[in-house]
Image (cartoon, rainbow, N blue to C red; front, side, top):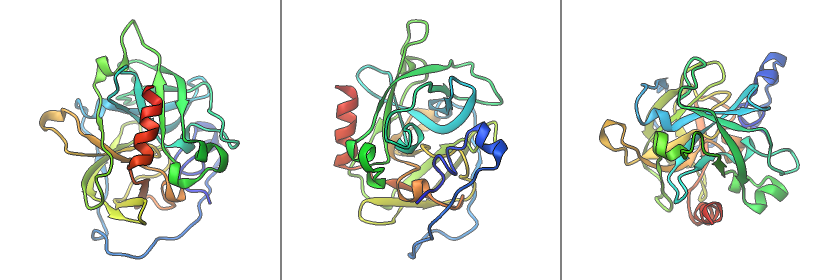
Length: 255
């Protein structure tokens, strides 16, 4: 089953020109926020600059969304696994990250991805229960990315019914969009939020709770991905529940 990952949400420039869109699946039942909530333009603040676009093919095309997460080495990103692996589960090469990207402006630098960390169950079977990836990036001008833009904390085992702010980059926007709403359970191990506008390119967008005043950061409790690779409608988005599976992958990434 494909969703808005490399088929819908991780759409590169070449795929867009070719009109490649693949979608499948259905909306699950349940009580959710009222229809009509839509994302708006994200303000250019300190929180926004921790989110950016993943660039593929040596920087020649836009792909997914990623964000900076705090780590001891201060060099770590988080996104969806389907954004950064090939069909056989191997890591993509030629990836880079542009935080705070707006209208082609990469004033905060373009950071080369040097390591892709995914769970072996994703690598072997593309199991949607493990559609999360951590990336390390090389320093720029002697500085680590977290030193330049800051980072958001990783949150695990927080459960459902959380107020989250989700920020990402649809392919047809040159600046990020954002939306705040509450999470609900898609299953025991997957969660969802309902807000329109999260279309091609938004896989990997971080779900932040516990936001500090003035854009001081928050806690990442999800990324668009997982079930249907994040969803087959721009109005409904999914994430793997951040629990011990994600905690173990984070420990692997910082080891």
